[in-house]
Image 1 (cartoon, rainbow over the protein chains, first blue to last red):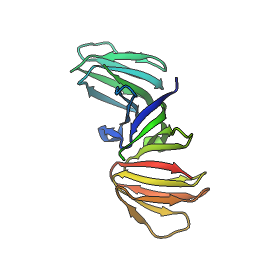
Image 2: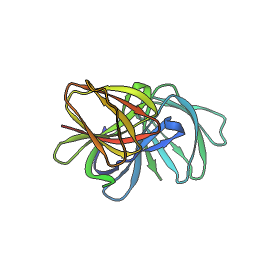
Image 3: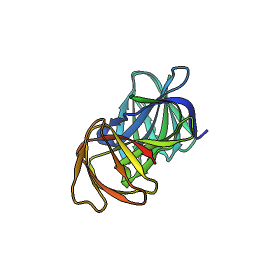
Image 4: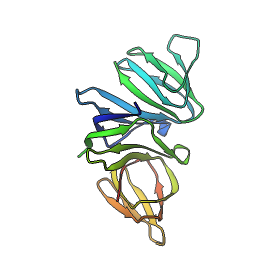
Length: 103
Length: 103
């Protein structure tokens, strides 16, 4: 599924890390919030509030969850889970397109 | 209106100028396509195919349409029109949030 249907989209984007990450918030018909975004080439650390499932739409990334030593690579169609109140390091070499699902 | 309702959103973003411009395509219920996007601090030149109405959601920009010498400044809530098959120069000092309506 390359698109979300029947959703609301917040016009103003979320801009993080001086624009290295740009996302738009969407709200599904049942009230569920998600975000569709891009991470540009960078090494970043994101903190989570709610748990997140990061779905890779295009591109790939290397991810290291808090407390882990191993980096894992995720490509198109692959997802990874990040616990609540945690963090993860992410490295991106080319534009990484994602959907963030909040748990 | 801070959001679009009952639309489809393409998950994969449009990334231009090495990420200086990131947008997501939305499709309204009647089939109309628009994009919601951000331009990061930069001086850029965009080419148009279809005519565009650029609506400023947040931030501000300076714009010079093709063939004009004058730069005009547009802030939140202000829009500007760009003819078909033309171009415009745009300068942005802080994240500029927009909706692009295609004519």
